[in-house]
Image (cartoon, rainbow, N blue to C red; front, side, top):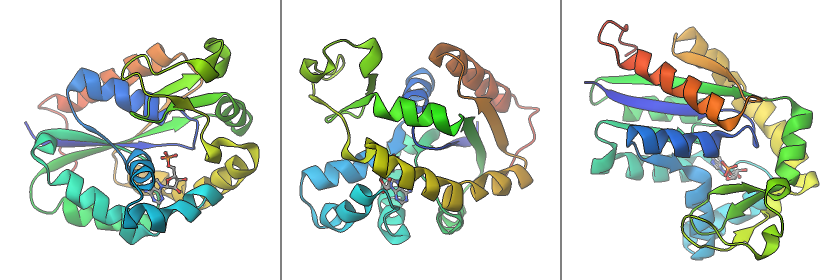
Length: 226
Ligand code: AMP
């Protein structure tokens, strides 16, 4: 079985984090979220966290070199041997090029999963989104009454409404997504490894669709992408 690289693409609020987490659990692949790793670095006040903070608070992308280094280090770990899920990386064509160089060592199947959601739905979702400050699990204020006082049902970490989920920063993040990240769809589509999913279905329906896509990809007769 070839190593599988699953790349989640989609705007903030599309459900990448939730779906990447669920898929990771069902496939037993690690989920690698650059956003979570950067937030952890900020919390621990590391040199990298200090460099990333102002970009993240403004809703801008942090410099490519910073995230490239985190991803390189994370992908070299043993648990990524048979497959892994990238949530939030790559986000620029430059990062795609860098990621490709990390895949040069051995055979790998790449699949880019694009989650499509309309802008107005994204804005509403992000306004109601709360995140576990410890493990990154996502919650919705509308379906969780009294969310301010709740803790994560998995790790008991405190829930926060991310600063960059405020209306003003969200506007910038969506702009950045459309300008810098959306072109990646075309790139992966041309390589024949892009699959698009309607992100306005239920969480479980999307998960079911994603599992079917990955199952088909694991069939031996499926063309090897790289
Ligand atoms: P996320 O949790 O994926 O929404 O990421 C939160 C923020 O972290 C983004 O708005 C960026 O500032 C930064 N970030 C995460 N991943 C990347 C990346 N691949 N490239 C540049 N910045 C990133």
